[in-house]
Image (cartoon, rainbow, N blue to C red):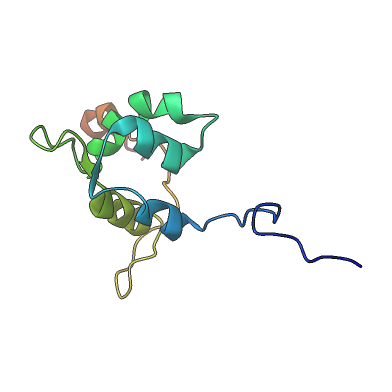
Length: 110
């Protein structure tokens, strides 16, 4: 007789992004957010990436709470990649800004 697999031997279902974030508290330290955003293999890169994203609007670490407000982090990435309802935004970043070029004069062609 073949038995159905027990709950202990069933393969674990992979959690969706929202389910995984729902397991976090409202405020979480950067090590956990780095893992959730970049995955465990690249989580250490978050320390260099986060300050760059803060300049674009990523919520900063709240010193009293000791972490970033997780729902605002999700909202930031949804906005970055055009997932906000009713708000038009680019689907992907268009490159690195070169603010020095703004002050250079263009040559006029006659």
